[in-house]
Image (cartoon, rainbow, N blue to C red; front, side, top):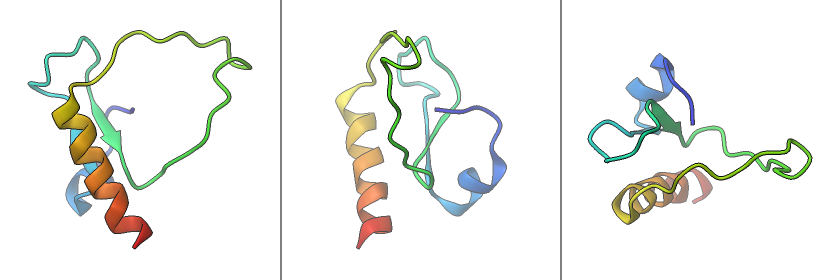
Length: 66
């Protein structure tokens, strides 16, 4: 997730978290999928997005990989 990205927002490859009921703000950029080693970064899960947001992200990723 990232905040303040204009290209992804205008090209239709971002999903906003505004109104999603999450503490995290910003957008999920679907135009830059990446694999991240969470244990190497000592990351921890803070929260989950609602199923409707995940469905929207997956739909946008499907377009990229068609």
